[in-house]
Image 1 (cartoon, helix red, strand yellow):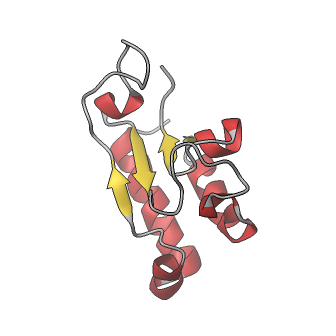
Image 2 (spheres, rainbow, N blue to C red; image 1 turned 90 degrees about the vertical axis):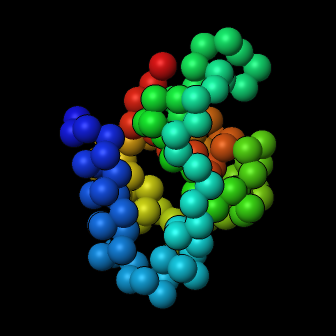
Length: 110
């Protein structure tokens, strides 16, 4: 897999190309929630994937940490092309894998 920087750049470029700027904004895919945050995992002592700069959160207002697919915006069908773009670059979504933290996607697992 390419370095996180390169693949993340590809995710954002491909997302913009697929949706266009107006649709990206309408879907709140431009709402940054965080990336590098040197901290332990919630409820643990090992470092979070965010501590390594290998995770990104988008639109936390509409995709709260504990929300499942019944509430999270990113679980809706209109986001499927975005998730395909993310997965094509080797990143994974906790929302799609575990049905929580839909704002979060990561380039690595710890």
